[in-house]
Length: 205
Image (cartoon, rainbow, N blue to C red):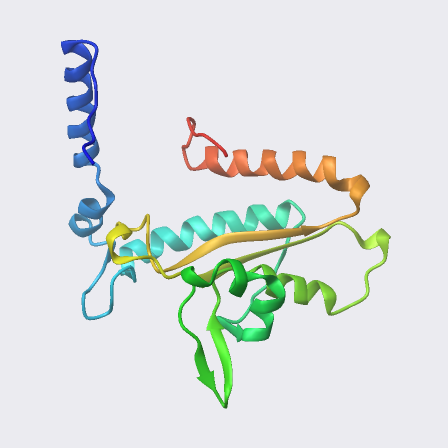
């Protein structure tokens, strides 16, 4: 296959080259090394990130801001394990539909366990651990959950495509009649968080 980009004018090409040069100057992989924020290491394995003290402090401050905002917006913080039995991922459908993106099973006392690629099944288990009245709803849970996904070596890219990362993950349990309000609420909250970090122009799919 041959890929190409077409420019309608010399001015458009010039603008593109300037943008390309600026993007290379701001490459987070270069900045991460120059500012001593994070590193990767072949001995550790591809797509696994080591956060250095300066980078860890930036991450800590970002996470603390987000956690406080979640609490202010009616979320309860939860924590879940890094692994779960195969049965959990069978029930959730991950082993049927997502297995190629999961790490191989870990044998523990004759049973298969998997590193979690997502936090969803754990939050559902927390919710199901007790009976809830319709008056208790909505229940909003949030976790800074570290997940592990098997990405092919060819697509790994700095902090953007990795094999282990911590995500701001939340689940909302509500009645059908509460859904319109909850959808509006969560979308506005997402926009608020993005804009708080300076993201003004973005696309949502």
